Picture 1 (cartoon, rainbow, N blue to C red):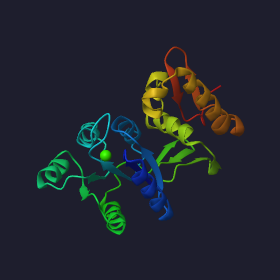
Picture 2 (picture 1 turned 90 degrees about the vertical axis):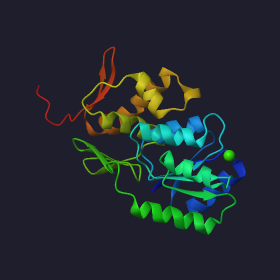
Picture 3 (picture 1 turned 45 degrees about the vertical axis):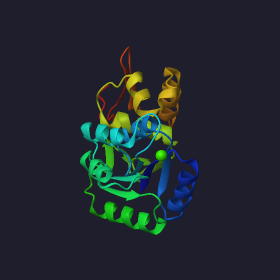
Length: 227
Ligand code: CA
């Protein structure tokens, strides 16, 4: 199960990362609001732990923006404030629960478990395009049942293409959904797509990841191609 932790205090982020990893969660960290927002947009997290006071974009805005975009991933807000007003405001913007700093680690883990238990399967757990499947919770990819090892970035790119299977997705869209803002460079997309092709197509004698001239890339079910 994958958790996104959006926290600018490096020590706290590090401690939580260590603790939650030991609990068996896969944890990704974002150190500011903007980075948190783009990572959360992939929709591949089972849960988001979101600090409110963040550089770049504060937690209220991250939360509100995600809900506006229809992303329903459960959000647990961490706040250094303890006024009822802040807590109410956090819940109003679409957070599911909150915890006031300093908090007990044991309580945090219990709250996470409770949220995960009651959260409906909001996003499809498995994306499938033909016999290619992507399990978004465990970040595993399979072609006709055979496990394909992907890097996190390759997985993110493939997930964007799979969600829009059959449609051309531009390099710009892929960049925006799968890379942090400071790293936007179209050459990165080409390199990742080439690597993906080797892994999900060439190895299996397939041609599912297609280049659409002038428009980008398209992922299709290529099992019943006509000559
Ligand atoms: Ca903070």
